[in-house]
Length: 98
Image (cartoon, rainbow, N blue to C red):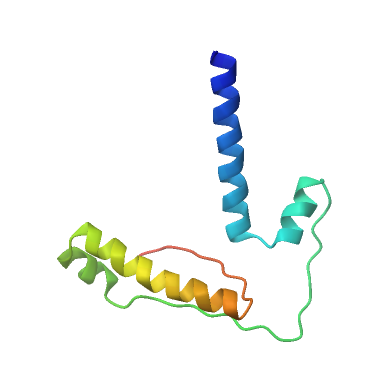
């Protein structure tokens, strides 16, 4: 019984890891890594890099209930994700607070 439970946990962890990888790496990079292949750098003639910041986020989040902050972030990133899908953009997220 313990072996079945361990395999179930292992299976869920693998699924979670796969989901996380899909969020931060292009599929062809994930596939290359899974098959032990070297990931070669790619060259693009044109790229755009977009950095964004929620100005005053620390102050805003300090004045709101946690649920309100989560709702605000969810609305913002849902709209952003829709635009990324619409324009076939690759999104890399980082979180930091100066």
